[in-house]
Length: 243
Image (cartoon, rainbow, N blue to C red):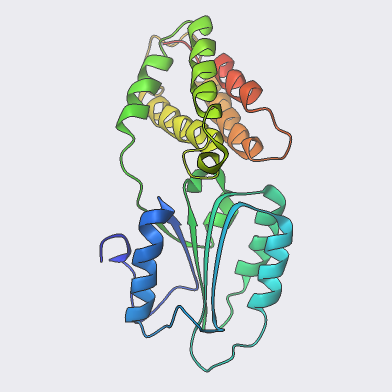
């Protein structure tokens, strides 16, 4: 089955969080559900939602629909795909998944699970499918050795390059924000491997904790309405210790 091979068909979890490319995951997931005898077309107990941003109104609607009684005695299934989940929506989803509903199962697909609240992620059976970010890791390795001016130039190029894409492409995973988030993931991975052992750091271990906390906050703010991606990413360039 590939992506979904670790799912126990005989004992489904009430909520799955699948990280990766929705274009690859959705077809496989639909096939997986059909193999379980769950119809994915003309079935009032199957709901598929695809959005760019999952807002609080969407979360409230999902809560309302999820609490409704199913049309059949079978399983009620929700397949949700979104590039990002706004903070208010995540807080509402927390309440939905606190108490699982019998015979109701959620499959949520996101390009990057790291941008979600840790308390929300903990409610799910997490499946990571994204490939190793080889190019991003190489860029992150170079980034931490750059002087500040070069880091700022790198951020400017990273963002401008994606802003030149057309509107249709920006709604996909390779949008400006998604690319920035992917780079942040690679950057954090590199820092995790370097910080505890690199004795040439210009700042102490205490500063490294502050650095990780800052990256976490940047991830949260990136998807907030009105946030400045350029300012947020430049703040990361300023915060990262020099190696």
